[in-house]
Image (cartoon, rainbow, N blue to C red; front, side):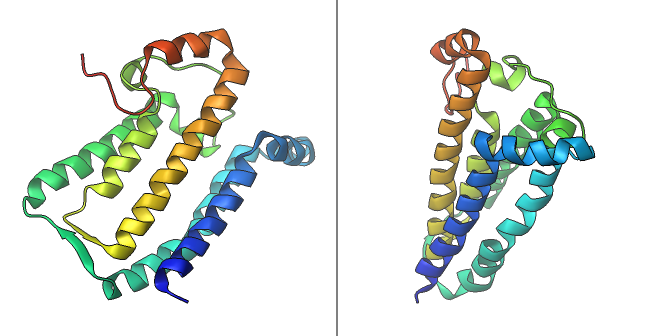
Length: 188
């Protein structure tokens, strides 16, 4: 089996498990069992998300050097700035929405955040992640496949998150969507 098929299958398995465990129907069923025991689902979800990404990440790291270079760019400093900007956007949006809540260390507060980075774009975490992964001075064919799969998964994540937010916040979220771009920020 080719390295591309293997990586795609490993990533697909991660995406399936990650999506299933993020789905509201799954979350409600597990919470019914965990809540009486004082366990927060979000914390369990966060703890399980990391090891489910290990197989594809380890495989990618082991095999990427065996695949051809598709793109090699000069100007590493400029790319490093884009990568750092992506990491900063990701971290700042995480802090703004509540890192402890996101990780499951504190109970989630249901609120619609529309200020700060969220006044420029609806999904700054995804924007930061996309900038971070694609801003590489060298992209091998296996890198390109992983980055493409991740970007497509982010698009799916945006779709699912928007559905959940529309259910949760109704007209307030719909109004926010009508004036705020999803992923490409308004800089004015």
